[in-house]
Length: 395
Image (cartoon, one colour):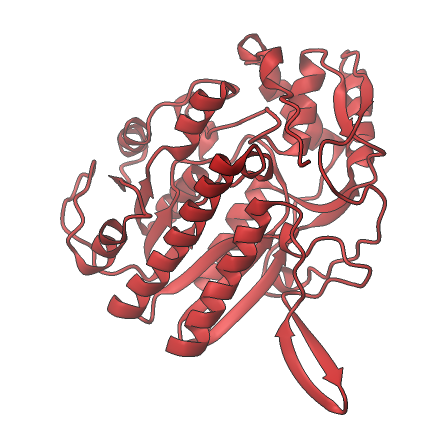
């Protein structure tokens, strides 16, 4: 297949690019280094330095013989997006400059991915809203105008649903009202402006499906954990961006880093906040199988992309236990919750659809956590304690 990955420099985007390239697909990645620039502006660190997207693509070619074409550009600019579909794009780096044609599949990671970032102040809220919605809208129109058969795989978030007091279905819910029945998108209730943009993304693409017959798979992803994939293990310079701070780091990744450097695990409030989680290797698996088994024309297919659920306190206790076994003095600290969220709630999402199409879950084991400890400890000298917690408040 001809695969286009939007946001190909990021924590998930770069491993996805290598994964598809290794399988023999034609891969193009696009990024504008948004996350790297934001880390500099907000003075938060990555676990270890990561070469540029161009440098990593060049190294990937040297090591494997496979090409990942690179475009550095801002996808909020419609002509940059459209150039990827009409053949007018200019590659920043490639081996073969021949345009491979419109993509069969677009994987859409190109969004500001952080709830805390979106809640810092009005300026960061504006950045989140404008970036996320413009990129999605530009993508939708480019597919409509140039290649309606292209399959869009959009990374949504389980945070769109919030924590309703009913079971969370996979994207849709059947409603009976005054003797009549219909099917609707499952009610959304976001807990941040970032999550609000993800709801709006879903609504935009559902509009495109209804109006123009687009084909869309929306993956409602939970927090991802892990550092290594088969491809990142080929060479240290191929590793992905890994944040451990409150803004861009996911909770389990943060807890392991905090444990390694003796920083108390930061639990917001009671720690009863329950979410669905998945290993980074399962993100690759879910996206890959979704691409191989695409949605139909005129179909908005929604999967809840999680493999198991934990409360924050449960994760902290798991990390603490493994850390103690490995000789780390892991402490847990409850902080006043800077977010506005339920700390104790019902949470029962359905997540069978991806398993039905062939995904085989990687469950969180003590050995998985121990491997994370070993990988993080290799770079422990790079960890800045003042990057871990910034105290961003929702109020």
